[in-house]
Image (cartoon, rainbow, N blue to C red; front, side):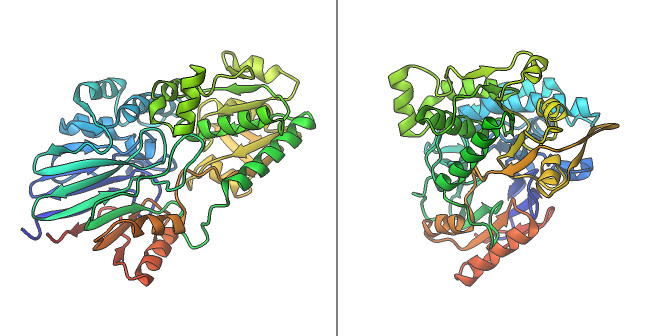
Length: 445
């Protein structure tokens, strides 16, 4: 049977974005994630390569666009069923529709239509954690990845051949919303692991230290009469930021300040409330006792009229999409507030190369927001490492929990970070490889 089994990396290899892996099983294949690269300049680099085998199913680890954003096109073209957890199913539909709207606004070619997103409903199979299910000859089990609401790792067992674990995005440490990734994984032959923060210099500071600086910066801005723009990923990061702000307001370490929530965050907060049983135990108890959403607070208000918010003269905080400044409500807030040096822009997540957020983080202070629409950023710019990814030591620690690993494939990272993680694994005696996009690797049974 050797040679009948292979991995083909359709995207997300030596890059962050368009994650997609084809697991070839003879003439058929399983697709693990199907994402888009939000910072890519061309369609060729934005979307995954086409699979070669007859696609039996798509399994999506979580709803972030770099893992799910191409799924409607793949399902449309192959007719395959799609497997994910219920929270991922519900959140991804929202993000996919929003992605299409942003593509239309920017004049980019759309890879699929709204009807293709809606068609997913008839082909979706919601699956639970640690409940094995079968696709053809493969037995598949999902494990908690600790990354965002509903995120999973995918373990596939091929009888009399091999087992393989695909981590998707992985967070070993807990956050304010979620417990950390599951480490009780059965012996596994191959592991495909992310490396977003896999570099030698990637050591996340303690969360308490991150929050302390974040709250100090926000407090200083508010006290001097400024406004705070916090661009966030609608799924995961926004909820962490909101709970952090509210906890410090309630404790008195941050003055009571209006918090306006804009964009897709509003709807996803409601989904968090719907799936409260997926949250960390402490938050579950709070929801049960209060019978209220964890984001329900007298100082939190949904934005209904952005112009009215921009006309307010008193200090406030706005938590809005998109997290990399690529589109959405944040563009209006940048136009209205970025030119005032009293204000603060707080980036809170990984900024992909080629995005406005990455440019701002690297010191660029003139941003083009649209054709002929350029602004000068005079507001202070800061970055808080509210990461939902494990760093290098966390990724290595995670792998140490899995018995029997024969080889590790390092993906979903900038080239130097993937290489550094691979070299560190090799130095510890673990066979490791950093594939390229389009590369095909034979798996030994």
